[in-house]
Amino acid sequence: MLDLAARIILLPILVFQAVRVRRTALRLADPAGRRNGVSGQGPALNLLIIGDSSAVGVGTSHQEEALLGHMRKRLSQTNTVFWSVDAETGATTADTIARLEKGLPQKFDVVLISLGVNDITEMVPLPVWLWRFSALLDLIKLKFQADVVCVSGIPQMQFFPLLPQPLRWVAGAQARRFDRALRRLVDKRTGCRFVIMDFEPDVSRMSPDGFHPGPKIYAEWGRKIYRAIRVDVKRLRYPNHM
Image 1 (cartoon, rainbow, N blue to C red):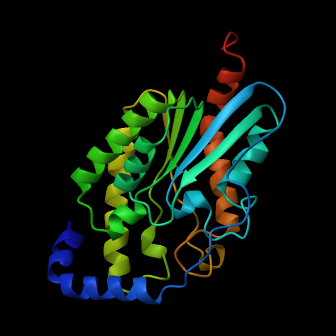
Image 2: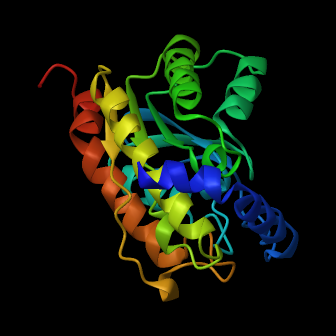
């Protein structure tokens, strides 16, 4: 809990650094490419990706290099995949709930979630964030009748080169706290899977802005998610053989 005390003591410095980062950070464009479509052959599978800029694929030049592209390629080998991305750069969990509530109900077999980093940078208290994330999971089950929900954990923000010290250290400690709490929440939910974002802390694998994943991390992320849900996907494909 040393970082919590440090947050109080260093609050003026942390606020100054956070404001400066927002003003001076390199702004990367969203990747080119469609955010919805259909591909593959086999039993139908409806895939939805929701979340923040990482769910959008910021840090890549095209959706083929982003999470969507990697998931589409893998799932399309065995299924006819109807895929869609409903994500926004800068989105918090509260933003995502508000956006999804405005949409029409629709059936999705698999929903992937990437959220939390913006809640940390916006200094949302952990108990408030957990309540919101739980409400999001309820909404997804109710509105999308999701069979499988795969939640990505919080990345290791202590390795984000964009963030100066001590902001990087404090954000990293908070990210670890959020990640542990999120995993406990997800593990209690039927049909939910958790993916640990423990990627190698190599600056060369990140995007030029020092904050978003680069193409190699997106590729590894896609592999992690596929490994986490492949048994579920097989069960959905052959429901009478499992």
